[in-house]
Length: 131
Image 1: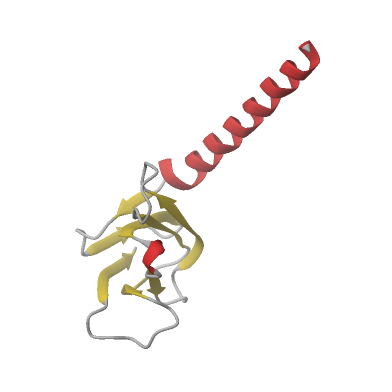
Image 2: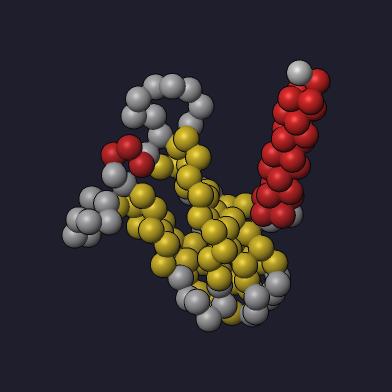
């Protein structure tokens, strides 16, 4: 019994350590931007992330479009809003690296990927300056 409890404690510590490591590698050290921002200014070599409210239960998702010559999309995540309510929304997270200087537009289209683009779809634009 003690061996089983010890194994569970070790497992819990490992899982918690990995969660904290992920947080500090991608979130804590990064600048964040959201729907209310229009300008993203970062230094070359810096990471940043954009978070946008979303509701994937409807089939809609934010689709990024950006200049790959100075931005790299490192990863994309979706986090459900708290609770058990069916159809609840959540947040899309997009983690970028800016390896070199450049300027351009980072845009996100909120659409259903299998449908043709419609004028009713939301679009968010960010001016990006990497110095």
